[in-house]
Image (tube, rainbow, N blue to C red; front, side, top):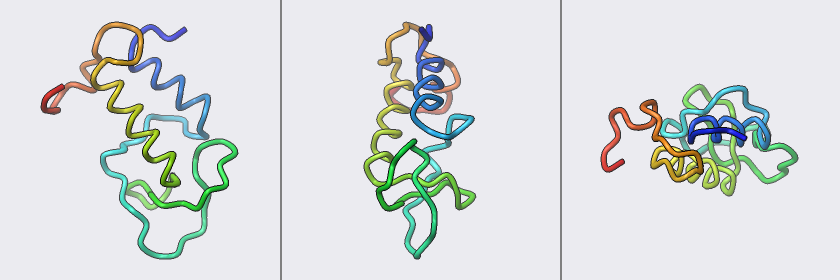
Length: 95
């Protein structure tokens, strides 16, 4: 079992998505033009609604909200495991 919030977040992403790294969810943008693609969550068939800063790694609306929640929980150290990772606390207000 992962020991800290960062490790737990990495494990969730590896288990439920096709991503190899933690996405920069703060730089995701809403898709405003028609695009072809699939949500990065395994088995998801919902229409894509969000893309990363490079125009890829799509998320549907529901999984975008899930990913934001996972990131916030990890930043706050709410995912079981104890210590808050400095990766998530640098430059963040109110964490």
